[in-house]
Length: 223
Ligand code: Z5A
Image (cartoon, rainbow, N blue to C red; front, top):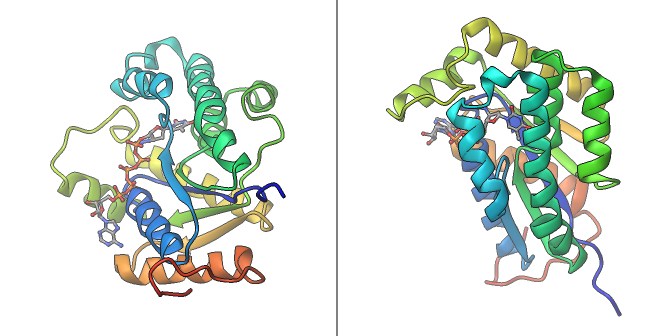
């Protein structure tokens, strides 16, 4: 009998909302439940897409305009889906991904004002019928998220360096997306401690994706 398709969970949100932290925490928790899971990110996640990540986050493509950036993000996504995500899901592995097509919709589509027809066409070409089973949108006031990023002491990337108004619009756009797609997207308050946010996310995943699935405890722990 063939393995059932793995589940596909994506994380979205503004800068410093804790996506990378919570992707790791959720993957660890799923493994404790005996689930085979890979963590990945966008842009990136495959060798070809990681090479494109460097160009995109350096800001080298900014001068070419948001349409070109949208196409580059989509090209990276196409490689990532073909090389990593789809094969993993098909063999029954769960995939937890830090950002996915919603980021293109919000950053290039809403904030960059790229024509929705182009955004939808890029989605069709790169992703086809693949949709996340669940998208966790980590919501945080802009000042708190940016303060977390600044506290890391690293150089800001092309998007982190945008002004406060840009980040405010970003937050509004993500909240609107969640309102429009409540069956797939869940808004999670990202301001409490890392532990508290991880518990809330686990409750969402357990409720939405694990309710009727028996635990296969890898280390004695169950969800
Ligand atoms: N982009 C796009 O425009 N179009 C697209 O299609 C795609 C992406 C796919 C990718 O950057 C950029 O590309 C992104 C959108 C654009 N914009 N930016 N910038 P990235 O991958 O380098 O960065 P990011 O996705 O925005 O993540 P981030 O800013 O690095 O942060 P994060 O992953 O959300 O948070 P974190 O690294 O887990 O945590 C940040 C810090 O806060 C860290 O020191 C943590 O220890 C701390 N932290 C985390 N959680 C907490 C809590 N709960 N309390 C206190 N401190 C915490």
